[in-house]
Amino acid sequence: MTVEGRISDSAQGKLQTELETEEQESKGAEGQGRALLHLHSSAPLHLRSSAEQAVVRGVMLVLALFALWAIWPKVMSSVWTNLGTIELSRAMVGRDTSGLESGRAYLERATQWDAGHGQTYRNLGRLTAFRGDLSTAIGSLTQATESQPKDVWAHLELGDAYWDLGRKEEAINSWERAVSVDPTVVERLEQEGPAGSGKFATYSEYNQILEMIAKAAVEAHPGRLYPYLVLGRLARDRGDYPEATRWFSLAAQVDRGSPDPPHELGSLAEGQGRYDLAEAYFRKAIELEPRQTSHYEALVRIYAKQQKFELAAEWYVRLLVLDPGHPNYHYGLAQACYELGRYADALAEYRQVLSLDPGNQAAQAQVVALERMLGEGSTK
Image (cartoon, rainbow, N blue to C red; front, top):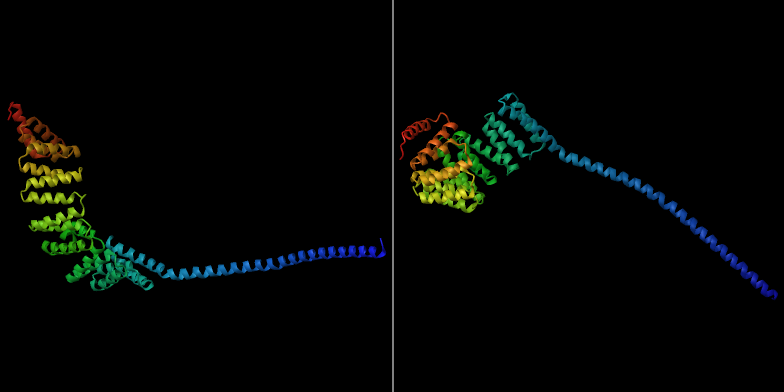
């Protein structure tokens, strides 16, 4: 090999070594750079996470304070309302009126915290009405109905306050609004009756108002059964049988599964002496409600009126299956058996009456008479 060739090889080897050294240095520098970059980037990320957590905690605290600020008036209103309601209850139930003035102050304070709280105004109206201040009560109850239009008791009590002040038309309007919210108001008013409510001077006045309210309930809730029944009974009681039949028939269409319309139609037919029609209606009521004894009682009543004693006895036996300890059913069966000439059966039933009702003088007299008859060997 020539000198030039050796020099060339040496130069190439040196160059290769330098290249490898530079590559290693480059890789080392790259690694150091990456490490520095990691140190540089990770520390700020950690610091930013802490800062963000602090910001989140601050935001949550602000939101919590805002929420508390938003609900605080309602909380305070509820507290004062409850305190006032306690004093009202003590007065109305316990007849302790010593706290009424405090109760009024509590409720008025509640309205200052939350002017839209309908229950507060209702209780305030109730309290002032209880104290006899009806004009002020009307103002509070009006605010209650405006704040909570579906508060049926606010409408009812507003109607009561109007009525007690002699403002009858406004009272009826309030009661009609009450039934537009809850049609069961009609049922409560009918069951309460004029004497129970203490509002009405005569039965006639009571019936007229009940009819208006029931018609309002039918208009607002045409699918509810009870107002139709009320209107039918009112028409029947004043002797308007065609109108009563119309309302009871409408009731039957509204609720085909209810036994009440056929029972009412049966009673209406019975009152007119149409016993065959009454029998059909009462049997329909029994079909719909087979364990309700009042339907059976109506049926045996019309059989007795027609002197169909065989059928009467049959249905009295069915009644006794439902209620074997009822003395009136044993007495009715005894009478039917007597009319059929079944004296021994009649005597047994009259004795059963006395075992259940020892003071029943009619049964005692029948037992004495039948014992004398049967003791003599008499037959009919």
